[in-house]
Every structure is written in structure tokens, then in C-alpha cells.
Image (tube, rainbow, N blue to C red; front, side, top):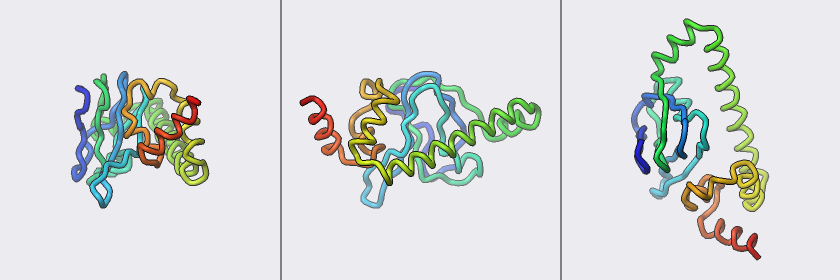
Length: 160
């Protein structure tokens, strides 16, 4: 998929669960002021979609977009259900992916509530050091729950 393409749009039922083979993607929505809020950045490899809405086949408030050019694998809900019914191993794998997603989201919520902006930035850099090479600063700042100016200030302080 090309860079900057939105592959799932808000207001629609997500069609696919994506596996990111290469490239960087994000999940975002618009707040009441019309500003983009990035809620997830996917560093390859990994899965991405508006997961709750994909599983429940409900309209999503999220957009799924390619930040860079991406190589993706995708599966529909119908095909995912079929594979889960046909293969116990695949069903176990699907459950493990779901459990990891829940754990990730719970941990992310806790970090946003308890860590300082600087601590969140350091943790992101420790876990995903190449992210700055591929993801624009405004997406990283939004993902970390801060304004781009705050992230720039934190980064300047680290250089000193």
C-alpha cells in the first residue's frame, strides 16, 4: 500500500484485519476540534485494525493509515472465522493475538495515566528506536499524548 493512504475509514465497518509485514501504520481518529489523535502506531511485524469494531462488525470511529509504504497481509472477518473453525491451532493463535492486544492496550492506558511525557518518550525510544526514522513527529507526539512542541522540547533537552 502506498505511503499516506487511508485503508480503513471512520464511519464504516472495518473490512480487514491487517498483518504488517513491512512499513509503519497508525490508527487515528478526529477529536471534537477536528484534530487527529493517533491512538496506535504499528511497528512491523504486527497486526492492526480497529479491532473491537472488526470483531463485532460495527462502524468504527477510527481510520487505519499507512505512514510509509507498507507490505500487508489481510483477512476478512468471515475468513478469520472460517480458519478459526477449521483449525484448533489457528484458533489458539487468534486467541493469543487477542490476549496480547488486550494486554498492550491495558498497559498503554496505565502508562498514559502514570508516566510523565518524558518517561513515555524514553520508553518508546527504548522499545522502538527506529520509529523516529519513519514516523513524523506529530504522529509520535499525538500517540504519546502530548503536543508536537512538547515532544520537540523533550528531544532538545536530551541533546544538551
